[in-house]
Length: 248
Image (cartoon, rainbow, N blue to C red; front, side, top):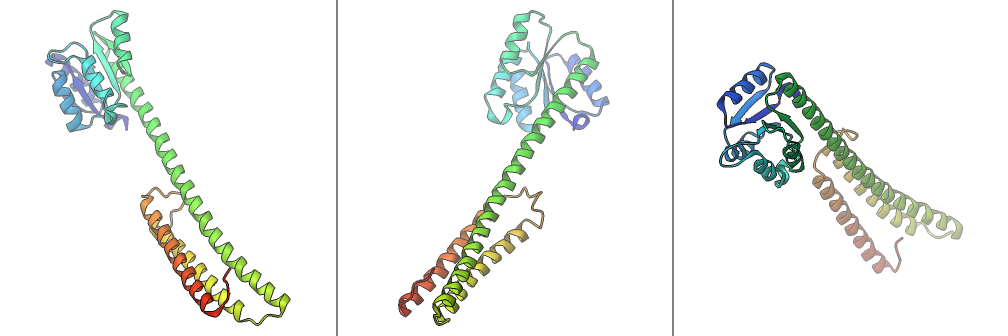
């Protein structure tokens, strides 16, 4: 990401902006600029930069005020910001870091140092983004695992109902009518579960371990299954009431 990143340079001195633009562009960065704090905030919204080089002393709105405004906005709270200033007092550096700056460089500076710090911050941001993405994928895989466990539970219950009824018929020498009725009902439940599973697999395009789509569709499929199972149980209950038998 580093060399293709978008950098917003904010400085009220055009000579500084041009110098940084030339050096950064020569290294493959895309550079935007602003000459004061208000324009900087507008550019952040319009251009969505990957990092800011922000001068502290500017008219209308200084760099610290810009930084505080960015950190107060959830969308830009993690945007990497390097403060550039001619002030060398430690109190100014502390103020900038307390306001949320990721780094602080005093003028005059060596351009190679600026480039190195930019690359370091961009690498760190990419690592953080990778961690968030990995956690998001793991959460989705865990949600899928729980869904599959639920489907397995439904199938297990249905097969146990069939097996239990068959064993009861064998022990009591009961006529097989009850076994047939239970088997048909539970087989229909198993088919509903398998149909749900098939729809889930198709939705995920057979990429279970890499699945990172929206969870809403999976939830919709699960809700459809629960409704279908409830309908099957209701139908079975009606038949049992008419025939005087209870259904497991």
